[in-house]
Length: 85
Image (cartoon, rainbow, N blue to C red; front, side, top):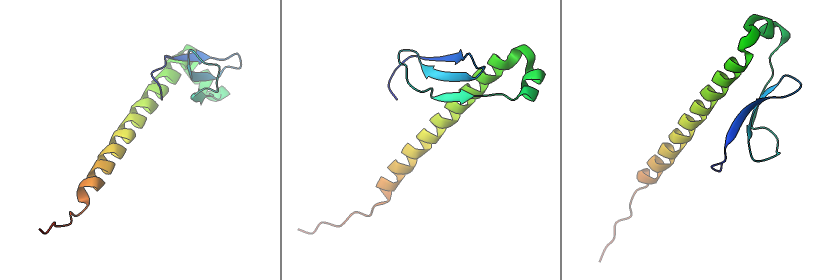
């Protein structure tokens, strides 16, 4: 992903989305709460959605870091061919 600015927005249909603030593309994340969960959360819907998005971004970052570490580990696992002169 680029270094765009992101925003969390509530759409007219009630969904909460994470989107790039400078583009009109499909949202990166969309959260839709059921009627039961909305009645439980009351005014906290946006706060819960924000916490869910932040947790997801943190998990994605950790997974990306693990992928880099795995890749670098695989590079180090290759046996070196001896060079004879």
